[in-house]
Image (tube, rainbow, N blue to C red):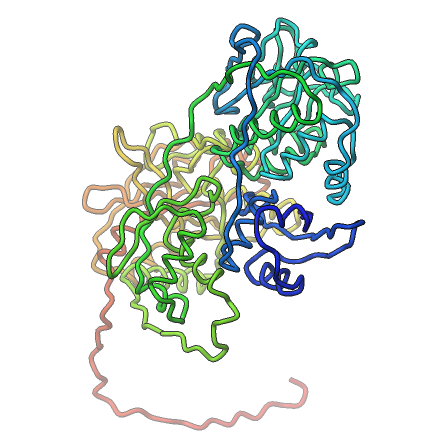
Length: 593
């Protein structure tokens, strides 16, 4: 993010030396990349992390400077006199995909004159390395670099039907962008369309058919909020990256949309003339209120290792834009500002206090309070299980909890209910929370076979997620294993495990009917009338389902009853009645041996 020093100075006093300014910004998280003199201005290149989209504009950086140096932030409320026809008589906006575009605003300006931008505007854009095009397009870029909210100006006369429809793209439809290239859409993008065709790829780039040209007279100004995932996917899918997509991918301030729209109209009237139509079309749901966050003052020295006074902590949070709702001797409750979406919990507030107070003020030799941790029953038993499985020759695997629908349906030892689905796939088509770990281990086994490693013994300790009607899913911790050995070998491993960890647990076996397993060489393991697990060799159809070359045996055991029945207190055996005898043996071998 390149910042103009002259521009930044309009919002906050920059009387401090440049080195001090850049050093403090670097310490607080905006790392300095470079400082370059451009004419009578200075370009400051800052690295902005993905969690701080509020600093992708001059006002956001000015807020940081004001907080760090305890300066006054000078912001103005933009406005323009509207004297034209009511906008509702000229156009309309409809959102058909609220999940992709939660909010869309439009304003109309009539009678503009397209021409070159004034020198002050052009110089500032050149300082930032942005190409100067014309007064209208330059204003949209200027406001984006000012507040961080992307905007777009349509040639209103070229919008067929005089309306805006925000919808999901139709698979196979074509869109001509302002780079004069044609893109075939997949149906996953959000498009801005008129009555007949797409005129912009939402959050990414405008269209060639409605771009502002020298003949443009009337404008429709768009300021909207688009889903970050949809914008990111569209930009990568079509290799169409822009300053707008960069910002929408990281999220924009929902309360800054109208400010940016009003500021854009104000500057267009100043640089291109025209008449602003009365009113604004604002469609969609406004962002809900931010949740209150509590900061406990005793957590500051505990987690940061330094003492920061309550007054200083409150001053920092207030300067950052947090609204204080409660204050007492031991805590403060605040509502974070809308432009700081990264502030969601107490740890975030603690980080802000440390960051603004100064990481450099933390002594190098500060002592960190150490507390002894207590190993729970679960920790002890799971460690024993891992040790026993490793001693038996197994390697521990770690696989994802999300699998595809086909794998989820192959083996369901714990329930016959449909698996829980995730809203987004962790991997391609992997959108189901698994109800068994065995399919994941068999997939690992197939991968090892294809890489010339057929002799692989794997185990995994993980949770499976079993749906419950009208309630949260049951999270069952299980031990799953797969071996190239037969049924008896796997059964011996399970017997050894139970004998060493829960010798008093009473269990039995009975026939099972899983299609994945050979009915003659498989069983269900029961304890107390409940299923403790399942064990068996794969049937021929089971091997084919996972494309395995050799035979394989699987087992899956519920660790819950084992943890409860585990014997954790070591018991002493009977002492021998005989004295130990030590012998030192020397054996002589012939040299030929």
